[in-house]
Image 1 (cartoon, rainbow, N blue to C red):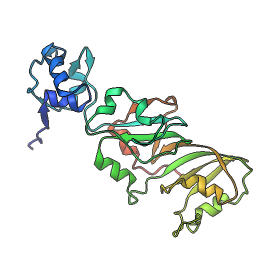
Image 2 (image 1 turned 180 degrees about the vertical axis):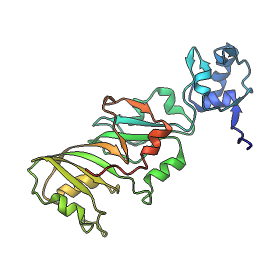
Image 3 (image 1 turned 90 degrees about the horizontal axis):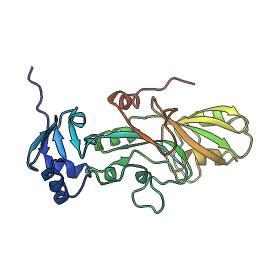
Image 4 (image 1 turned 120 degrees about the vertical axis):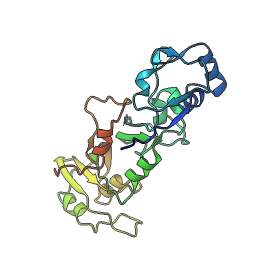
Length: 251
């Protein structure tokens, strides 16, 4: 069976798309012998590079391994006080990435959002098809949040949220059933399959309570790694991405 041809691109175009520098500056890196492939210097910007899966292990730029090529998907442990927007004022999740990663083309975009005062697992990708597959309502990918509340729970929250008829103020359609498990008088975790504006905060507000802390710890079957420190990120493997589309075990 014939294997599909791997894509290829010019060396200077590759390095520019990965954010190393503008095209003219990239040419300087190449002329100075700073770019090697399998140990041999690449001295022409128009050299065609086959985009093999192991390219980042085989190519060196200024003595360091080439950054991962597209498609790139990563998990970031978002701190509070940081926004998920490209344009909103203030510290952005993109500012937590290496500077040249912010210049990549196609650009990295967040998969959905967490509001400024929420923390936890956020995904970023330059794969547009993957992004739309994850956020599509058809996928019904679940998201679990750890919730801390201002007042004691009423005791009927789990039943209310599970009905499929629970309405939010100013909404015209009920929420899909959600799973809430209390872990204390003022805490618990809630799993939803929608992403309405400030949904979890508004759900508890509708019961007369107020969310004082909110952190996402799971998307689909992918958990926020316990060893991933706040503000840090790590690349997702193909197996990690596949976990996003697996149904998590019931609590």
